[in-house]
Structure formats: C-alpha cells, structure tokens
Image 1: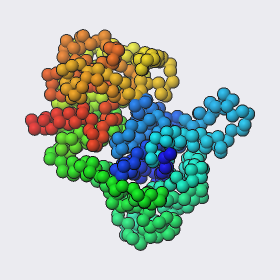
Image 2: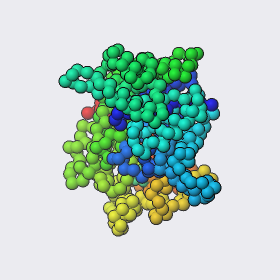
Image 3: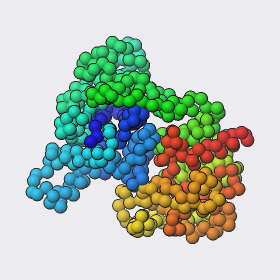
Image 4: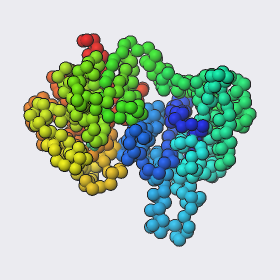
Length: 546
Ligand code: GLN
C-alpha cells in the first residue's frame, strides 16, 4: 500500500503548491519510486469545467475525460504519469455524491453529517488505487483556514490515524521580506502552522517560499516554533524556470526530508540526469523566436498554461528560447492586423468559447496564410482557420460557427462548424442536445484519429494512428471537405469512423495546421509534443528568412 504525503498551504494562495508537489513527485521518481499525484479542491463547483478561465485558469483534461484543475498539468509535465478522473476532486463533487446516496437511501435512515459522511467520502476517494504506487501525493487546494476546506483537513487528519506511520504532512508557506527592516518574517508561518495544529495536523515538513535566502537563524527559529526538525525546513526560493524546481528543491533537501519523515533509510540516490538535461536546454538556448498567441483569455497567463509550457518544450527541443506574446484578438476587429503581427515568427490561435474575439482570430488566420507565417490553430483555432478558408477561399461569405448563433439566439452564419450531437466513444454512441447541462457534456478526453498517409501532420507524428485529448462541443462539418480541399485546405486527420474532421492543413504553406484536439496537454519538458517541436522549428526557419 502507498505511503501518503499530504501537501497543504498557508499564509497566502498562489505560492506554487502544485509545482512543489509535482517537483517532489519527480524527485521520488528519480529515486526509483512510483508516484501518483492528486488534487483535492475545496470549492463547490463539481469540477472546474464550468468555470471561466479568468476565474480559475486553464481546465486540464485527462485521457479519461475529466475536466480538472491546472495543477494536474504540472503533475503530468513533471512526472509523465497520466492523470485520471480519480486524481481530482472538489467539495462540490463530494457533496453531490453524498446527497445522491442520501436520496437513494444508502445511509439507511441515518442523519447525514460532515463527520463522518462527508469525511468518509473524501477518505474513500483518497484511497483509490493506493495499491498501485509507492507514494500518493495529495495536494489540498486553497489555504488552511478556508471554511470550505475544513472537511478535507479533517479527513486527512483522520486518515493519518487510520494509516498511522504511513502519512506525512508538508506545509507550504511564505516568508515575507520586509525591505525596511531587511528581514524575512517567520510570524505568518508560525500562525499558519498554529492554525493547522488547532485542527489536529502537525506538519512534518515546511516548504518556505521566499525571495531571499533564509538565514540559518530563521530556519532554526521556524523549526523551534513550528515543531519540525531544522532539516525539515526547506527553503523554496523563486526560480527562473519552473523546471529548475526538482534540482533546486533537491539541493535544499526536500526529498531527503520526506524520506526521513517516513524513516526510510535505504532509498537509492536520485538519478537526476533527465532534469540536468532539461535545464541545460533551458539555460543555453542558441537563438530566440517570437510567437504570437492570438486569443481571448490573454490577461491571465494561467488561462493557457499548457500551451505556454508546450511552446517552451518545443523551444527546448530546438534549442531556442520561445518568446510568446499574448495578443487579444478583439484588438484586430476594427483594425488592420499587419502592424500587430509583423515581426512574429509564428502565430498560434488557441482554444476558447464564445464569439467574442473570433473575427480577430479569423483575421490572424488570413494574415498567416497569405504571408506564409507558420500558423497553429488549436480547437477553436482550427475551427476559425476552417471558417477563414470557407469565407476567403471557397466563397462562402457568411461561413461561421453555430456556437455563435446559439449564443446570440439568432441565425446569422452558414454553419461550417456545427453543434455536435452524436459521436462514438469506444463501442457506444453518445448523444447530445442543445438543452443539455453545460457541465461535463462536451466531447471530452482521449479519442483516436487517423492521419492521411503522406500528409504533413502524419510526417510530424511519424505515424498515422494517434490519440489526443479533446474538449469541444462543436465540430467542423465534413460536408465542406470537398469544397475546401479543392482550394488547398486538406482534411488530413479524421476520426476512425470517418465522420469527424480532426486536423486540417495547407500543403503549399511553410506550416499551416489546425487540430480539433489539445496536443499541449500531453507535452513534457523531457518529451516535447511533436506538433510543438515542429511548429517551433518552423518558427526558427521563418526567423532566418526575415
Ligand atoms: N468553443 C469550441 C467548441 O466548443 C472550441 C472549444 C475549444 O477551443 N476548446 O467546439
């Protein structure tokens, strides 16, 4: 059975608990252990699928079709372990399960209470698959003291009793620096640990985020006041690259402290070759490319987290630094795009929902096509590239997506992109209606696609059979294939049943590809996604032309 590491946060949010957890997972793997990472989120949404990216950042989709927190993206990028539905849970999901059981009569007339019914549900969740790995890392979202997180803290407290000796707690906090005094302050951390202890949890390890090195004196003070061993106070200084986290935290003794807390004395030394190689590529780029990301949720970097990371990986593969600039597509709507896009070596239009900004995306696609600038359209970015081709190459002037008509409540477009009502998943057919709930009803998760022999995309993948993750409700209409292919937009990838276009490309263009899926979700620093590696390579080529 797995040993458990519970990761909690204190003082303020956004300290990078997800990253710290992911880096710890990578370090344990480097020592030869198997790991799985899990995220427990206190909010009441059933999953983040219905939350705006402005609220919550990117929605990360797993192979098995769960819409999860973006921290699962960090977990996968650092450990290479594919996350599952059962690696992400929210209070909303827990409560809705408990209430469903209550309605079914499963509790046999009992009064339903947070303890034990809600906490039991959380504990059952934590246990799923614990015979498969050496270490289960469970991160609790939010910070200690949040009202809605209390059942989670109570559940992990109980769990550490149920599995006595097999659980440890790691608490991530902030040591603020007071410039006037020239000091790092430990008081907020002391308070946050006190708060944890008041609910029965005593941390074994403190990870201390700090902008400055932590003097020995402060480390000793933290150890004394927070009741941890001095070597279990781990400084987590700001890093220039997130991929430096495993090496940096190892140097500070994070994995050693974890093993000590479990009394594991015979752990193999870690093999960190992979991370040294990753950092070598990050630190020594041989050039730089500029890529424009033309989308809608550009104010918040986290909204396209996986795309930003996948571009970085593509850069590492080509030994260049990728400078990604986020441009709000709405900007283009009344204006000429040229001054905005000139000077970029490639253009990427990412996924998105709703009509706002889409005319600007279409303009960006036209610009890329006409100026031979590499273009990568992902999900909505592919739908807009097809719309662009339909309007400007195939002469369907009012081509558009049904999504926008549905949103507006009136019919304005010829639906080149239509509402997907039926598709095949494995051996069952899924049916959808416009009136369906919004949550969890998209075409979600991994689906296979068949790539045309000899197409550009098949050449990039090095195979004609692929599986990629999806998250969409609308789909390019196969009925326009002939008309568009006659004009040079090739439907190179199709679902295995031949019904759904999965990728499009223009052959006589340096690099013009649209994909209905989200390749960015599977890219890793040590295994860049082939499409991102190839796209950045095309940007490098383009940069040599200008
Ligand atoms: N809004 C589009 C759809 O639902 C695209 C989705 C996306 O880009 N993820 O099909």
